[in-house]
Image (cartoon, rainbow, N blue to C red):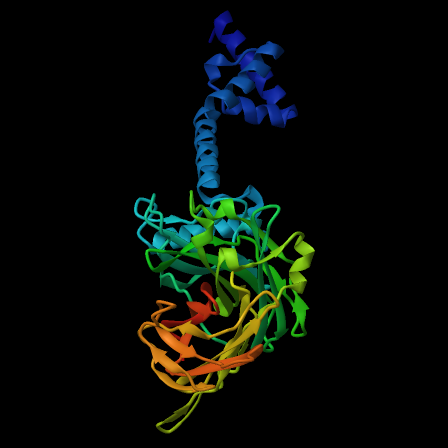
Length: 456
């Protein structure tokens, strides 16, 4: 049977192609996936066909990869993490802080109704955190977006290896939290006159055997007869050992308190030193003073010479059956006010028993003073006097001092001496007014009993 030249040429082409495919297996795979009608013996065309195949079949893949990359970038922005953070053990402080903030936002209904304090939106190292070794714990405040008060406190722990998140506490902001056995601390507060700043220093004299703790401070200002938080230190100071340690002084410019055009002569401040560790927050010491009565220093280094207040918390509460006994605690003073008529009054401290508080003061007649007649310690309406030493007189109010409280009349020849009053109730330290009468009456502000009950 005769064969046409066209048919012979086609068979020859097929045979030649099979031979080439046998000797070039890589090319065979490429050609086998191509449309047979597009096959050509031109080498350049073959290369173009292979490239065209990849381009054509990868369009959707590349589009998908592009979408994935966009999603990855969105995830990175949302979660605030590096691409390497998914590897075990690579979670960093910044990502952990963002996770903690997101946990607080979720716990409080989302960002539309809650915003964490500014410290949780800045650099992670400036946020209020404690390094627990295997985790970090943040204690921060928040509230409704735009609100001036941060009424919600949230404590969040984030574990370094697993990114596990535990919300330790979420609720109303606490002025005092857990009390722990055997803390003995000393807090110094002064004002740096050249820079119009507060200077704070905490000395830890003794502490319980716990893991490394960190200390931080919070400053409150009295507004409309209530304490309002106006500043909280972002960075914490490590208290690494159980031995005595003096922490580095902290300087807080008054302008950072956000008080506006406040009259500094009437500004009343409450400074609280905290220790934080393992999700717990402990009030170590608090000091209530008028800004004008703070000891003035010209350099930060002089803070170590300032008289300080000391807190010893034994807190040895034990329960046996239905009987409960509460240990005593003592707050040693040191705050002094010098009055315009030449008398100086020093708050020496308060000691607490199970149901009373004894307040001690020291009065001195300076060389410029003359003929002390009497002096009055202002007491709040809640105070009930159990006893006084030396014996005093309850006045309500005193006609000269125009304050209500207890009045002492030392008699002629008085130069200096201590006075104490025992009150029913365990009242926390606040601010009171004292008045000393010589030829004239002078008044000042000093630490004294408040109507806030000390935690049992």
